[in-house]
Structures are given as structure tokens and as C-alpha cells.
Image (cartoon, rainbow, N blue to C red; front, side, top):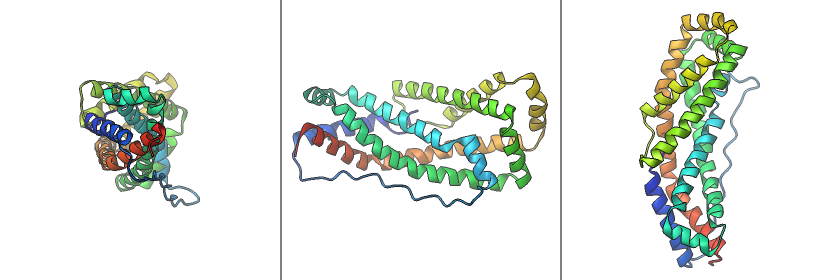
Length: 256
């Protein structure tokens, strides 16, 4: 999905690539991505922390976001005439640049990952009782819950890719609340198709409980917030992305 001003960033990075190839600046070390600080974990994670990993899968979700960001950016760079000219001079330049940019994106997403987990854990603990969280864990660990999650995730990823392509075609710069709703609706529709007759009693009980509405409200509220956080983190990384791109370009072209 388009999570930052893709065309602006691509033009800036393409220009940086050309500048790096044409000018021989002083030696510039490529900063290595900092390892994220280890998370403090108890012997047994809290119910809220377990729910975050089961429902949100933040690591996989942000990895998919990182890949979509990189793919969109590289697609734009590959359509830039100056960047294409440089790649023809020394084939493999785009691969080198993609590797350098992805290293910075990984660093950015590592920080977003910590914040995302913390935000969701705090939200769950403030909205649900301990019993509700325990019941929710039991539901999502049941065969019915597992099927619903699997179908919903697959649908959300597919819808996210569709929205990313649409955003790139329409030169959109951000994902908004309507995009989040589209992905959530796709997930719900797919999950409903996965229902089996034996799942109905479990789902009926879940629907009649206080948990469903609370969880839905939390998801709708936090989805856009998490995406806004990701937007800001990626936009803030632009100077570092440019530095990495320039360094990778100079190294690949043999510019000292």
C-alpha cells in the first residue's frame, strides 16, 4: 500500500542516485542498521501480548508493508530515465540500491514493530477484562478461530496489495481510514466463507459476548493510527534512505 509520498520520494532518490554517480565526494560510510533493543519479556507473556501476536501478527504485517514500500519505490526508480541510464552503464545497480534501501526500511520497521506491539497491548488491557482476554485467547486457539484468522489474513494481504497497486496508479500518497475499512471488510467476508456447520455454536456464543464489539471498535480505531505512525517513520527516514542509496550507487559504479 502506498504509505508515503512515493512519487516525491522516488524523484528525490533518483536524483540522489544520479548525483552520487556524477560527483566524487569524500568517503561516506554506509550506516549499518542498528539492532533493535531486545524486548523485555516475562517467562509467560501476558494475555494481551499473546493476543497481539495471534490477531495482529505485527511482525508479518510490517514485513509485508516493508516489501510493498520497497516494491513501489523500486518500480518508480526503474521508470526514471536517469536511473535507467545509470543501470545500463553498470547492470545490477537497481539490485544494489534495493538491498541498501531495504536495509534502512528494516531498521525503520523494527522501531515501528516495538511501538505497534506496545500500543496494541495497552489498548487491549484498557478495553478488555482479564476474563475477556482469556476467553478471546481460547476462541482464537480453537479450530474455528484458527480458520477465521487464516482466511482473514489472506484476504487482508490480497486487498492490501490491490490497494497498493491502485494507489501507485492514481499517485496517491497515503493510506487513509477508508483503506483500512476496505481491508477489514475483505477479511470479514473471507472469514465468513470459511465457516463450517460445527463452527456455528462457537461463533454464535462469540457474537453474543461483549468481546466482539469491543475488539471490532479497537481494530477500527487503531488501524489508521498505526498506519499514520508508519507513514511518519518512513517519511522521517528519507534522509537516511538517500544516504544509503548514494553510497550504494557510488560503490556499484566504482566512484571513489
